[in-house]
Length: 202
Image (cartoon, rainbow, N blue to C red; front, side):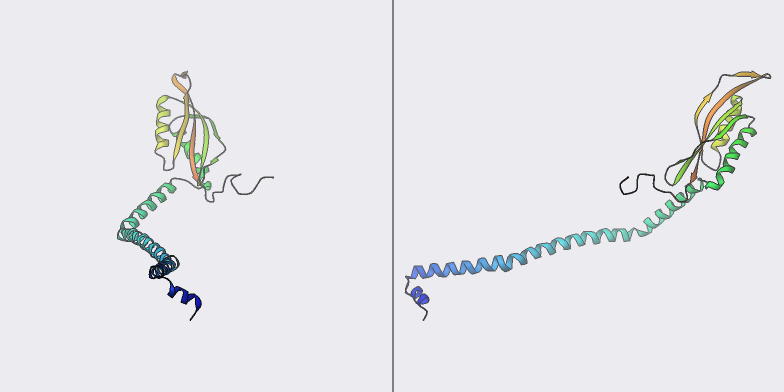
């Protein structure tokens, strides 16, 4: 018999009991830290993943249940977008649109003293196209012109309106009308503004 083992057997009973208890504690600790703890952590991780999957499943089920509603809403928004884009002319249509504005002024009896298109301003998918107007005519003629512009199929905004002093011309009261007519056009291929691209400037 091994001398170390023989020594253990020759120890008093209480010491042998202590040694057995220590061995059992060591085995239990080894089992817990080397096997059970890892499995416990894995079990907790699986429970969390399952809970997250159940939440995602509920969200997906909710979307699936309301898919018809979302599809109908998308189609409505698409129609509205098409209608909005329809009010933005293409670049090739701008000259005719500006001519229409001038024709409206003449139609309402206004004299066109200045009709000067200014530089357009790109705003992403659309561009502002301003025109400086200097007109002469009565207050009612100017009001009729602005009303007609507001009823145009394309969007045209009047900004910076100023009225000059009234003058009597050939027995008629005439006002000087200064303003900007701003229309908008659809930008077919919008590009990023300069300086927005990556890379350092030299």
